[in-house]
Length: 483
Image (cartoon, rainbow, N blue to C red; front, side):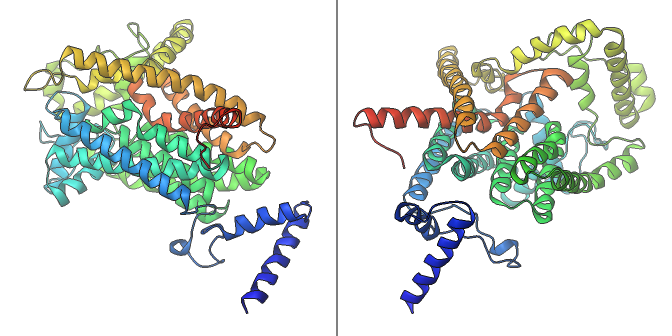
């Protein structure tokens, strides 16, 4: 019976090889048999449902063992950092607001201003609700937020390795996972109660899904939900369906199908955001698609004193105006005034607008040592780290980042020049990069922190360059090989 099954499999493999133009030589047949013998190399039967789906090309042999080891290393590094660095959300920055919003949600008070006690739409709700759920389940200590970052960061390492393996090979997958596991800036931000780690997880999850799922409506719906969750967390995700479309276009070579799937994913994302927009309309008495503080980011990038980076010279209402309007109306009115001022600046200062673009990009791609500014922000107990610690952490982060940035440029060229280049995956990575370039190179302002969720995709490109160099060295000498 086993012999008959084997003969049937070989016959099917022969037919498949002929269909795709492969010669049915012993070598080619051996390659096809090897692929067919991989656990998870065959997708679930049609109609089996999402729960039965297994990603193609995922083999839990040597690759799986090494990937799990890298995930464990990433977990240990992140856990060690949050244990070593006593950074709490008690400084007036994003982390304090996220922490307090999450406490209000966990306590059943809803999304309210933690300091004024009034309803608000100031910050994107995605992260506060995620954090609020964690606080409800495990307690509202900052340690809950930090351990959530550890878990999400570790899972992101594994997802990146699997996604890169799918279209660039096992060697590149392991290099990508290892590079992200040890990436200093991502480790540093594990201690922060901010969106960088969760949003990175969502983007890499989208990457993992799109390279493993077929280009069908079900995939568009799933990815639309991911995009919707991302939009509720960070504005960059507004363009995520466009990145999907670039992938589907080059994967299926069908403009019609790519457009349909992109529209479906966009509509699903809009459906995810819609209830929050309706909530804002009801409680704020104004049309606020997601949050009012987005106007602060717009203003920072488009006013007479704009530098291209973060500033704190915000356009605000006078105390008398705020008192007269009340907290809710003052928030909406302040946001509306900033938006109007931004549009006037764009109209009246087109030359300044163009001159700000390279400045914003310089801030966006500045060294990762700048991320230590957020970690080192003074708290109620004083500075978090000593000056020498900040310097050492910063030097390590900059060395790692600039090396990685150089390797990603080399990897992009090598991936494009491959005989069977992964064009669809490269298009998706380019789409992700375009999201950040548009958002922080023109629409708002640049900061090294905002670039962190994009880094796994540069790591994917760098893994190609590092892997090819590794292979060349292996052939020339006795260097260890990754398979």
